[in-house]
Image 1 (cartoon, each protein chain N blue to C red):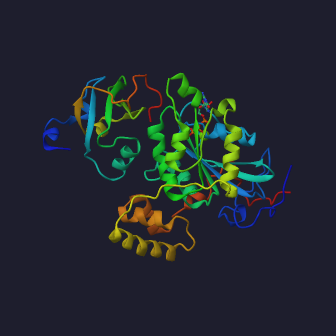
Image 2 (cartoon, each protein chain N blue to C red):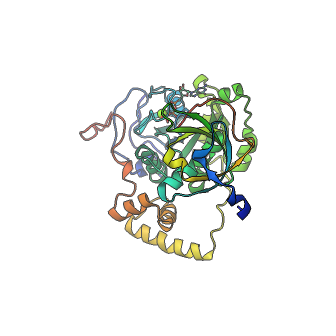
Image 3 (tube, rainbow over the protein chains, first blue to last red):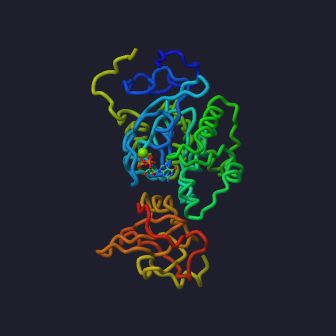
Length: 278
Length: 99
Ligand SMILES: Nc1nc2c(ncn2[C@@H]2O[C@H](COP(=O)(O)OP(=O)(O)OP(=O)(O)O)[C@@H](O)[C@H]2O)c(=O)[nH]1
Ligand SMILES: [Mg+2]
């Protein structure tokens, strides 16, 4: 089934996304044109992001048991309750703060790609390391779902994950999953739809108070960033990195390449202009 | 960390295989420090030295329930206080997803 561009609900979704029109590649499965919402799949390397992507879209992204398989963005689409979602499978990343070049692709999409929902896929067997990225994502958005994948593997190793308590502590929906066998998929779909449509409201705990002095500098810097990059999402996050002296963000802000990882790097992206589909 | 603890610190690279240490501080700065913090090498955390590759470099370490392999030059810049072992975070399983 195909939909035409423009059937979205307007204020959120593909039309307002900086990627709009830049990667309309025809692929098997549901066309990625005219979606209502955009979902980003984030998570540490090898946590099952592409497995979740394939389960939701029916596509066949490369899956295997070593980290670093997905190196560029891959996109697909699926429907939940008549709403159409574009989903972006990202390379694995341990952090939004320290990046290798494929992590930069993930970081840029999470920060600047304006996803309506960010699904953080975490590995139930190595929660402590995985929650680092989950917390960083929850610092920048309250539209997130935490998918605790590999629950079967955790059980085999005698690890119990209390996803209910975790959901309470994080203030975001937490879905236990074993994506390879489809366990938890209906719950994940419901959580994605709920967060996208606003029927599920995340209650993220506020970030620690940075103090009046830092806040004042941050406000000035955020304004300066926005003056240079009008409409940039997460300008405060960028300003925080500048205050910290994060070398990659400083360099990108200086030479005007902030968020450039958004352009290019799409799997199968054609050299020529998109064909406009339908 | 108190002064007395700081006196008995050694470098992570000097832990014998199977030896454990509590991280006291990271001696490097910049992106490399940030990276190690992101991988769980945070002061106060217990690290257990694991599998050493045939050439002696890199070495895999258990930290916060994960395995991470570090080059010797990285392990040379992490100060630990040797201790008796895991505090619940470090499993005894084999290497899995060395980064
Ligand atoms: N046991 C088990 N294995 C799973 C599950 N989900 C995924 N896997 C396996 O975990 C491995 C990694 O899955 P991928 O989907 O490739 O992981 P990824 O997060 O996309 O990996 P990168 O793109 O490399 O970051 C594959 O061998 C999958 O078959 C699950 O729920 N249970
Ligand atoms: Mg992948």
